[in-house]
Image 1 (tube, one colour):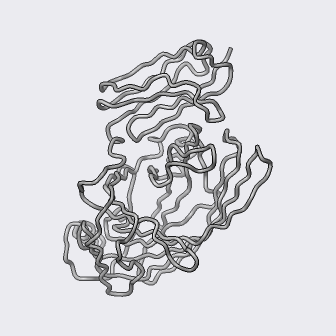
Image 2 (cartoon, one colour):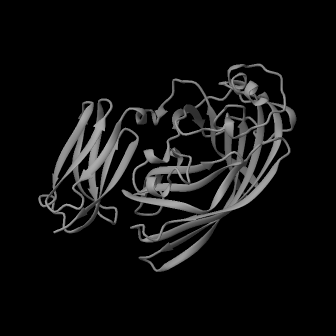
Image 3 (tube, helix red, strand yellow):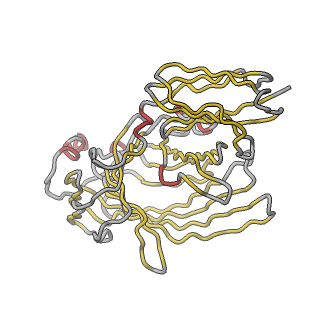
Length: 368
C-alpha cells in the first residue's frame, strides 16, 4: 500500500522535499500509455553529470526545440511481420523510435524504426527492433535481450549485462548487420528533479553502454567490425512517471562526454510537434487477393482528413510505382491496382502506405 501513496502525488505535486524513493514495474509504461516528451540537442550549459544523495537537479531553464508524442502500443498493433515475431507471448509493447529515421548505409534509408520491450515484475528488457529499410520490413530479434532496469530500482543498485541482435537471415537486403554490447548501470543519486514540467522526487540512473557493430555487404563480398565509442545514458525516474522524467544521452569523444540528446516529459509547448498524427490517421491496411495475378485491392480506413501516399517497391527497395499521393476524407478506402498495367512481373513486392508520420508495409506476391 505504501507504493500507491507515491503514484499520484509523485507526479502531480511540486516543491516536495527530497526523499529516497523506490521504482517498480508499476511506475513504467504499459501498452496503451501515451505522453508528450520535449526534446533538445544540449543541456544548455547545465552540468548533467553532478549527482549524489539528497541532491537537487535544477533543469528548469531548459528550452525545447520540439516535442514528440510517445505512444506505447500492444505488439498486435504493429504491421506484419513485426506483430508475428513480437507477439503478446514474448513482448509487452512497442513504440516508434524517431531518432533513427534517415540514412543508415549508402543507398539505404531507415523509413521507420520500432523498439520492442518485455516488462515483468522484476525487469524491463528491450527484446527487439523493427526497421523499414527502403520499404523492406526488417525485424531484428535480440538473441540476448538488453536489460534496461531490474526492479525494484533503489539508490546504490548496480546492474550489468550483455545484449546481442542482428538482421534476420530471411531479410531481403544485401547486407548483414548486427551488434553485441554490454550495459553497466548504477543508481548514483536521489533527490528532487526540477524541469519545466515540475519538481519531483527522483532517482538518477547512469548507464554506460559499450558495443561493437558488425557489417557484411554481400555485393562487395567483405565485412568489418566497428567498435563504437562508449555511450552514456542519464535517466531520472519518478514514481508513476512511465518514462524517465529527464534523460540525457552522451557519447565519448577522446575522453570527454559530448551530449547527443536531451529528452524530458512535458506538457504542450509552442514548438514543432512530431508523431501527433499517429493518433488519428490510418488503420485496417490490407491487400487482397494475395497472391494475385491480375488485380489486387488495397483497403484501409482513415480516422480523419489526411494525405495518403501508396507506393510499390521491389525486393531491392526500389520504388517501381507510386499509385496514389493525395488528400482524402475520413472513412473506409479501397483502391484497385492492375498489376499488368503497372508492368509487375511475377515475384515479391512490397506495398507501402504512408499517412502523417505513420508508415505500414504489406507483402504482395504476384503470380502468373
